[in-house]
Amino acid sequence: MSDPWTEAPEAPDGREPAITAPAGALWLAGLLVVAFFLQTFAATPALIDSLVYAPDPTPLARPLTLFTAIWLHGGWGHLGMNAAFALAFATPLARFLGGRARGTCALFLYFLVCGALGNLGFGLLHAGEPYGLIGASGGVSGLAAGAARIVGGGGGIGGLRSPFVLSMGVAWILSNLVVALAGGALIDGGAQIAWEAHLAGFAAGLVLLRPFAALAGADRG
Image (cartoon, helix red, strand yellow):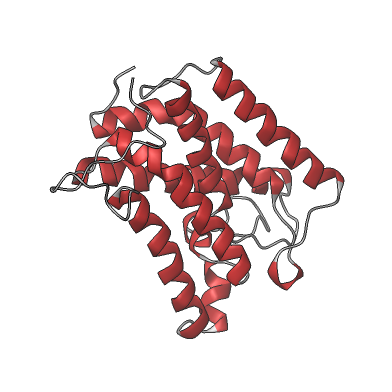
């Protein structure tokens, strides 16, 4: 059985390639970096404010910002953490979904939908409160859930009760519970980590992997 986390295609001459991550995973992490460059060096404060997700006055007052906020980050550390985890977790997913346009589009849509639902989960818990939410953490959490199902399934889609999925889920819940009890760990600029978006994004990733695998034509288990 192949290992979707570590297995990489050989180079044409038989040697192992220097970069083993699939193109879809590299593109996803790269676009997060590009978006932050634009945010830092090209965007005006007014434009950035218009892209931030806020559940005030209602969680769906500006629905488009559920998606635009994914591409904003609070600093280089915040970006670096999300880009690194996005690359790591997207790698087995990109191999499973396939490297053609159909698989890559499914990967990006899966990331965006999980991120938007993660943000919405935060918004539903903080409806009417004057919080602004940015970052790809909800989408990255969805990627983590999807990767857990792929690795737990040995290259197919593992069951929700498979040992690897259960252990990953417990670890995800406990780590975010620690953040919640600590009042929210701080990231760049003194902003707090939105643990609610992490948990909602992870839950979305668990449930939505199979439909997006079908979209990519990769539903093999």
